Every structure is written in structure tokens, then in C-alpha cells.
Length: 307
Image 1 (cartoon, rainbow, N blue to C red):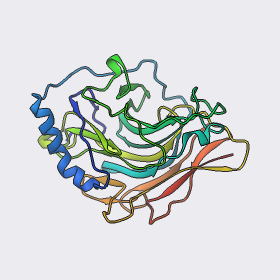
Image 2 (image 1 turned 135 degrees about the vertical axis):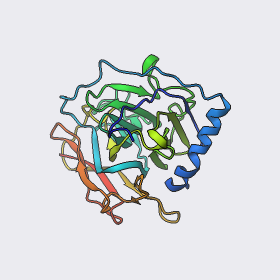
Image 3 (image 1 turned 120 degrees about the horizontal axis):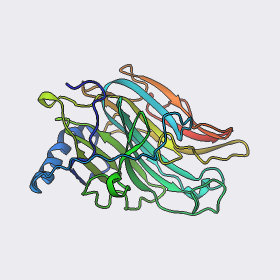
């Protein structure tokens, strides 16, 4: 196995696959690698070698955080998922410029951030004229140390994740729907697979020796996201009181689904004994977003805007 945090290469061949909403991550880990392999294999499995970077990306000294939710820390994590009902964006125009839901996997060198987000007004700034736009899914890969963007499904030129992306980031996701967000790093550890509702995106990366993981993900995060990256300075205003934004949880069983998983096949909620968890809130500013205490046996929580 390569050392923990081996460099991620999201610039390898990718494909998209449609996923039914009710399927659990256990099935994803078994079936999706074979499906992706078949799709790419039929196309001759071309492999790109260029890697994307973003020299103008935020630096590690930037103090801002645009996430509010929970972070799990453990060993060899390879699954993070949640279910969330997407709220009406215009309801938050006075309070936040952007609202979204995010799941993330962090290694020592890279951050995989999958989010569904929508601006609440035409400028994506708090306090504007309310607009009701649909949500869109975005997959971003960042350098953890510099926060530079390496690859995005909405990027251009060398910063665009490899095709075929298809309609993954252009398909409109309606407000009010309850969708599943997930990231999986399945056997044989040569793909990162992400999904938002019925759509998914897959890209290939080098596996370690003997098909062992080449990347060691040690953090997973489930959060409401109020910017375009985990470190973006959020546009948040609130004159007083508390405003509910969205709630995260597992689906009502059956089927039974976990929120966090690792390569040892431990699958459980945020508060499981297999890992440590901590609450995170947006920063800076007196108006901020924060998460409630956990409920539903450590699977669910609600994010609020408050002062």
C-alpha cells in the first residue's frame, strides 16, 4: 500500500452511470466498479495523464469556512453518504447568498467535495432579490494543503474533470426533493464514484500494489455548504433569531443504509465507536451556520443560521 495520503489523480478516464434512489452503499461497492469498468472498457479505456491545478485558489492561511455539519475522523474511510431534502433557495435570500448540501472525503493531500447547491439571488450574495433556481451537482477536487482547485465537473480547460461528464452538473435538481448524496472509493480502489440523486460520475485513479488502496482517506464530512469550497468565505447575514436550513439523515429503513464506511467493512452513523466525530460551523462573522446535536441514533442532524 502507498503511504497515507498518496497523491490523487482525478485526471484519469471517467464515466457516468444512473443510480436508483433506493440502493444502499453496500450494493454500490459491489456493483458500481463492474459497471464502470464495462462502460469504459467498451470505449477502449483511454487514460489521460494531465493533472489540473488552480494557481489562484485559496491558500491554507485563509481562515474562512463555508461548512456547517459534522466531520468524522477514522482510518481508511471509503464511503460517505447522506439523505437531505433540498429547501427552497429563495427563502434564504436575505440570509445567505448560496445554499447547498455536501459530502466530502479527505486524505492527507486531497479533498473530494460533492455538493448540490443553488444561489438564492442573481449575485449569489446575501441580501439580494430572491430567485428560485434549481440545484446543480458539482464535484470538486482540491489540494488539501494549498486549497487549489485540481479538477471540477464545472471547470474549464485544464481545470475540468475528464469526460464523459454528461449532464451530471447541468441537470437541474428540483427544490423540495429528498435526494441521496454519496462518495465511494470501492474495490479494487481504482475509481472514485460520486452520486447526487439519480446521477453519478466516476473517474479512475491509480490503485496501490495488489489492488490495495492507493489513497488513505482519514476524514469524512457531511454538511450544509454556503460557498464554492469548504474554505470559501460565506456570504451570510442574520439580524437575529435562528433560521432552519436543512436536515441530514439516513433513509427510513428498509433498506438500511450507513452514512460512513471504511475498507474493513465497518458501516455506521456519525457517532459510531469506529471513528471520532466533531461539529463544524461556518466562520467568520457574527452570523453563522451551525449544526444541531445528533439524533436518530447518531445519523441525523439539522443545520441552522444564527447569530
